[in-house]
Length: 310
Image (cartoon, rainbow, N blue to C red; front, side):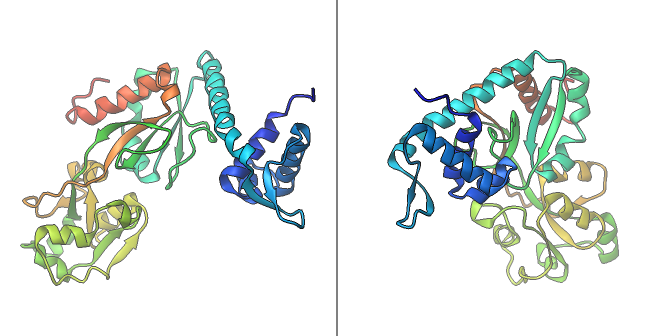
């Protein structure tokens, strides 16, 4: 029997098959494409089987063979179990590190203003925030728990609804004072609209067009205005008086409470079809650190302002 296969070679194979590219696998694993290719070849030689289809010239086409395709689910499950085992070991360490994946805007506008309460309640748990605009691979990046915005369906992850969200126009008090009262939604035709491009409209993410349709308003040129791909920056632009933003209530709540922003047309209500969810891998659901952080998030979202448990 040949010697046991090195874990690095299995990881290189799995990443190459998932990305269908040595270069993309190399970027994920922080090595060179040549190193990934060599690891895959070493694995093939060790097993005595081809893992990818090859053209007549011998050049590798990153399409897994039938045998490789059948093996991949077990290999991925094995890596998941290995990561879970390592996390179990870390649970007993002094560091108590918890890796949390959130968007940069959610971190800035909702989580960071509240995180001190979690740290006070759980001083032995160190929180590491992984902020990304796009969803990340929890296994590959060692993420324990996260908050995502969407419909609640992400393959491989359990999802618990955290918060629903309203969408409404906001502006700064100084813009409102400078313009006089915006008496009707039709008044928006004279204002600079600030657009949030942080999510693709195809996901159901509310846009100015959708809100104006809900309000029964026509004749507003929604193609114009300021376009920003970060929800926190959208609100900051409105705070600075650059125009009227279509705000998300979870992001804008603290700015409204402090008077940095003013909600316009409160008689028009529009609940977003998307919501915030706490997400984590099902096989990690009972980890004490994860349970503590998940329950804290749910308490923070549910409790009235100023009446937190922690």
